[in-house]
Length: 325
Image 1 (cartoon, rainbow, N blue to C red):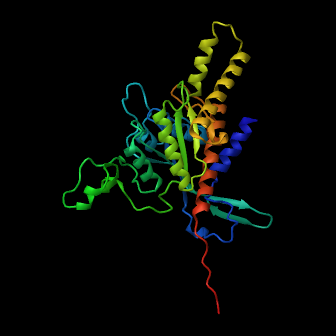
Image 2 (tube, rainbow, N blue to C red):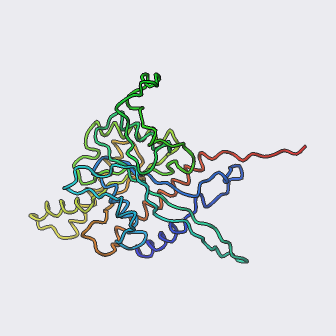
Image 3 (cartoon, rainbow, N blue to C red):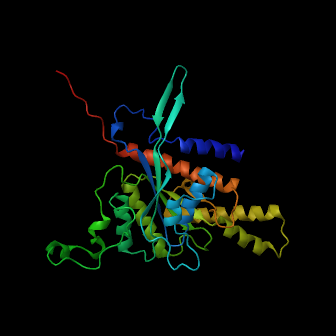
């Protein structure tokens, strides 16, 4: 059943067209971009880069990444003190022509490009990092740059001395915002194997504030992803090894723990339960396609595209009509 569902999801995503159902006669759909931008946020080492790899693997059933991914996708390892530094765009799907067969004719439409953006993980949870996220949410951050504030002011720009340090972004990381450059869908990624999610009060307050800012910009249902479910399973097996629990009991305990972790996130961040996902990312140990990993990754990706469409419809201007007298 999951294999069939995966095939259907792949077909839907590969044929995705921004706001495919354009049924509101009042909206100016001509203003829509030809792409959907999905942005990943989350603490450092939470698994954002691995999630992008998982999306590609699940969508194309291959662990061979394109050269662009191999060059720019930084998977966190124990030997790395820091993972992703730059705000980096990955084209998950290129546009292509899609032929739709109706009863009487064939209609050719162009499917849309899907971009997934990796971001630098939050560490300090301070005002500077809030401003960095805001710049990205506004669609004003340039891809392949380190979105970070300057540590100096230009002496000849007197108004800069009235600005906060957190507002001093260098010109080379800032671009003009438009519908094509803005995020259309947001995903927040957390390490699901930690004892507490989020890990402390500062992290809770930080992401609650960011989520509120996202909602105020019409990102009504950002998706929350808890990664590393495989590590949680390993812990459960280790704990139950001495009790000689069978496989069924281990599965029950795993489901119970996952449910508790999801409820914890719902309670701490004040988000709807249906927006929280617990998944396993593809790692080096995975040489073949895994049906379960694909299933949850594709569901998340499909839901993110739907949220992107909802966001775009919520901010589209109304059509202008010329009245004839």
